[in-house]
Image 1 (tube, rainbow, N blue to C red):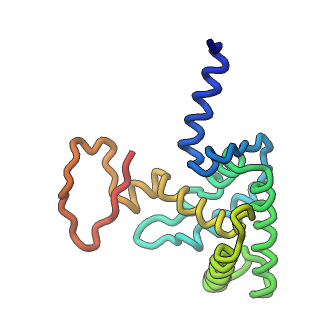
Image 2 (cartoon, rainbow, N blue to C red):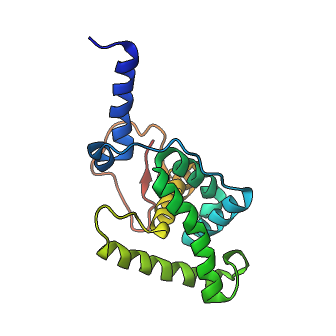
Image 3 (cartoon, rainbow, N blue to C red):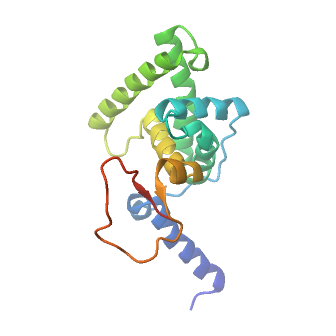
Length: 188
């Protein structure tokens, strides 16, 4: 017979597995309790990186969804200590790459320079992914890009202005009419 504390612990592990994914759950990964300390400047920097990935068009951009603050929460709450370190080092590496490519920091670069840099980093991350071993960490830019997309499309701004959203959609209609150019659906 188990006590209440042990039962709650087991439920938390099971629920955590659904959030973190099958790989993390199956391998027994323990999430860090270490919190990274991002400054307001770091969050502004991440918002600009995110805005370059998902810029404002007819719909709001990632900066409007404050994706930088989302990244901090996700890195603190869901990343292992080693991945937190890679992410934090990635902020520095991205800025260094900007200085090398554009002769100035990412924040002082033009939108076109920022885009060129992130396209190059995305290509670098994809090449790294092709050759990396399973146990090797993700590329820092892959982390930033994934968090940008997740943060934006799960935000209120992304779900309601970039996607079609119905809070309670009602019954399932398998052949719902779709016209070319319609927004994709967001669900809650």
